[in-house]
Image (cartoon, rainbow, N blue to C red; front, side, top):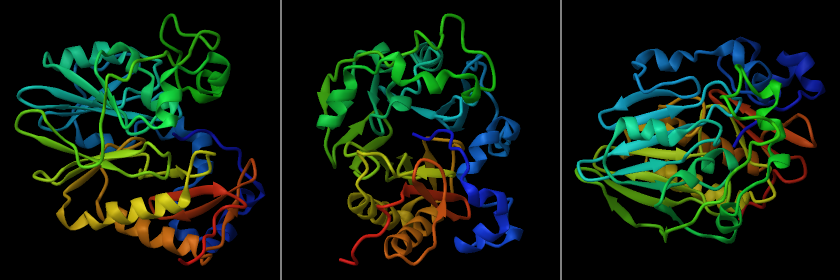
Length: 328
């Protein structure tokens, strides 16, 4: 999950702050910052999507792109989370990795793309990834306490910001309002665990439990193709690591695990912003995260008592009093 952050005092003197996080003023076009979220509408469409043909299943809310044969990115570009859910279609069945905000009707998109049985897996249980779960009969989960609590639904008063005018680049779909938008309850139909493999026919998807962002965070790995779906453990942009449910010790271990896969990867498919990332960024994430947690990078203050560590292609947002860990 990511959302809008008000800039702290450092953003008024951008060049000076950038040097504190290892970037010079000449890098201003390439580094990731929470301040970018204030103007996300002006950056649409993102250049990354120019490499793909928009599918006719795209509608008023979703844009759909086939990023590899049988792999569909279902993108919500007009809301500041810029969530990407992925439909992975095999010869026998399909997996829907995340179901978005629940603002648009993702089931109607999926039904246009496949007639095969669909199982839902969530990269984690933040509201912007489980919003359409209620539309599907088969939802698999690692079923931690956090997962189960989120399956009960999230009321509209907790989500007002997500459908407010400042969060949107266009009008909400007909029938969706600030007052009635909520994450509807859904049923977890079965459990999954680390190492489980889903055979969808011609493609095997291995479940990797990568706790840290949340305790139920998972990634999906197609070892044969060299594809990794990273969820919110990595994406190109400000990575949010300041939630009460975030565990930086676990996250550091999970990032190291994901980075160890890089020699066998051809592409990473993140859950926000851009549908394909260079696997080498996972190595950069591991190295920079280790430096941050060792106290070797100066943070930039942002809003709500949080700090940001900026690097080329991504940044790390953490609580001000929780960004250093002991070396062991």
